[in-house]
Image (cartoon, rainbow over all chains, first blue to last red; front, side):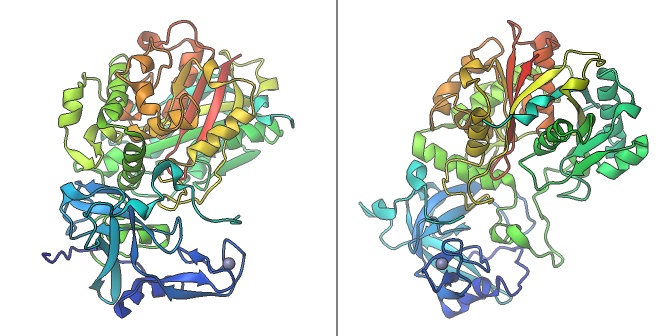
Length: 163
Length: 397
Ligand SMILES: [Zn+2]
């Protein structure tokens, strides 16, 4: 894969988001999780929306997920971030509705389709580890992605007991 | 059922400034044109105005988005106010009008002047539409909710809603031609509206051949940034004896959001908060979608009209593409006329208030060349996309 390293507007790091944006250095994305009930929380919050627990800690996720939607952006919004590129909405395997907006890389634009199984990789910018996704090695084999599940009308997810 | 308090409110005046591309006039200047027109339309004077409301309030968003703030309008007109509210944390752009309805219903004010002003065309100069936080060189960092999208080049609502639209296409077989029918209908109606910005005919070929913005959206799926201001006067129904025009009744409003207030964390990737706002509105009235004679549904992007059609129950989930079909059903003489003045796609991005203005014109029978035939009696107005959603059901009193 040809290296793609566009100019990116980076997040302003603070105590609430630093782990998310820097955890990629260790090779795995860390997401805040409730110690009491195990619920994953993204974006980070000081309270578990499922059980209202306050004992939360970042934990690494598998980095595997499903492409639940995408768009091929053609409009040059940001100087140095040249179109076309694929904006991806990825649902992580850990929990229904645990979603990240990202970019899909390592995939020809015409092959991008909803339901693709994807895996994480990172691109570093000044200590910020941007989580990106690429199709898994077997993504285009027959049957791949069928279990990805929560796409479309049945995607009602997740936060049992959430407020 | 508890009393539906918004029924104590009526719309008694409407006004609009010049609307156009790069008018080069200050937002306050345009706002005053719209406000004075609305006050005159209602047969009131500025001394009758005791309430003031706006969306989103001063200092919000990218350049030109806020248009004019509440205090500058109050001061320019030297209004003596009993109640006022301006802010963007609201159920969409119409949230400001809903607040005004409640203010008059509760006796906090009698005649509330509501306005929405945009100067996005002048602010963007000769170039294209600026992305949110775009042009981020020079140390600009993404904060708050934008930190989750801007680093990935998802800079605009065009991107965020394209994700919803793409998921809808995948789940329900919706096609670009369905979006195109919305854009073409808007353009056809705009040709009959002298105030519309784009009035030249648009064909499906033109639509499909236009450059892509963010798939499945092309150029004609995105509304037109303009300079312009719209003002609406909300009055207590019991204080309408002296107004000049037939008051338009507020039958019910919808302001609900029963999910995460987020563009990318909404539980159903094919829908938006519109479903909750719409459901709430219908819970507050005995009228049904079958009673609606004209629908001014939000079209900041063509897809949003499809989403509102489904949310409001004009068809089942996923069936909006079939409903718009070849466009005949949504034309001025169709079963459910949409965007009768050209909507934001062709008349200009007046950010929800343009749709409300048009609904009042239609219910009054003042639609001119674009008047829906048969004397429409019930109109629905909706505004917002993603986590922003509000709607109103209006009737000719
Ligand atoms: Zn918990």
